[in-house]
Image (cartoon, rainbow, N blue to C red; front, side, top):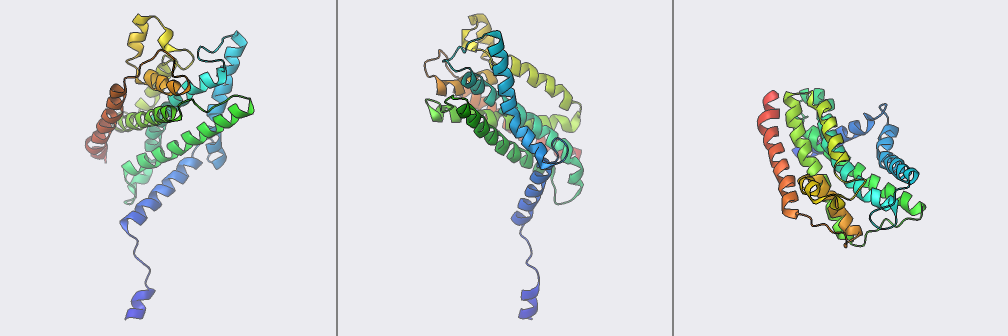
Length: 264
């Protein structure tokens, strides 16, 4: 009896099944980008470098100088990286839910699992993009290391946190109005262009700067840039930003509980 029992396959625990589901969803995420191969995932990781090259090239062509320090590449990277981290995560979490929705007919796959898997993939992609950009900056003779490393890293992590919070809200909206996936592209484009990625928001007229400060992405960019130049005349409202991060995450989780699950 004991010999027979020992020969039976071990029953997998709930955690084992859950981790296997997450890993399968993450691999599917990576293969579903740009043509259905892992090379497509590499294209997404390389996109921040291409983005940086385009913007720096445009500034050089127009003869614009960096308003923060003497390095245009570092100035653009310090604004673009946190803004893109927020933009990609908040958008891709929603797209991941839509792409993997048919898989939720399997009992092992829950809709929230698709959100968790896409969040993990996007976090890894974000840090890979940062390391790649830093390598490119070093190759061109720029110093990507901030004066206050913890300040810059904490600002970037806050951008990721806000992207996760807004992404979960987008999932709730998309579960009811799938067309929001297209509408949100216009929202992120508007926010990106008006957040101070290519200029210093603090040097705008006070009347304009006052309203720009209500945009959390503007303050996240200033948070990261404080790590590179602590002398810039900005004051980040950390309480306001953490309110956005934890408030959006709370609303998103409530929507997942009472809106997304109601659609099942």
